[in-house]
Image (cartoon, rainbow, N blue to C red; front, side, top):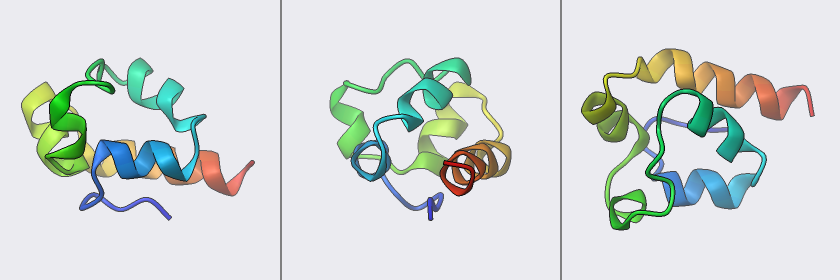
Length: 65
């Protein structure tokens, strides 16, 4: 299960397929140094993305896999 407190790096280690969802949401910094330094909620705030909505999309992907 993906949580907003997880780093982008942790999320990608959970399932590489989640990268497509992150990229399509507007989060194009998957390989940047901050991917291991800030959590999903922080990254969403920087990029103007709804963290709750994105977390739900990520978990829906995992649940339907």
